Length: 95
View 1 (cartoon, one colour):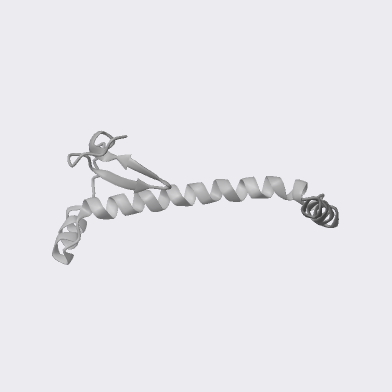
View 2: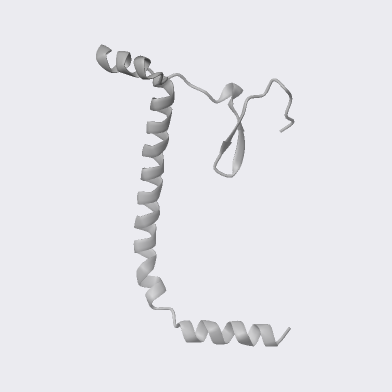
């Protein structure tokens, strides 16, 4: 992707994402008091929402990774580490 001054770029994971066509609007209703308290504190509600959504998605990603690690645990426990080490040494010595 060619980057021009009109592109809005954002780091997302290991990638740069062109945000000029990737943003969507999400509406959130909160009690008036909450909005007023945010304003008094000088906090932008959109920033709070973005951070909360990002944290939630990261939690979901980590939970999936933990589940996958648990699934792989049985397989990895059956691996004979000494045999793997021996194969690595044999390969290194053959070079």
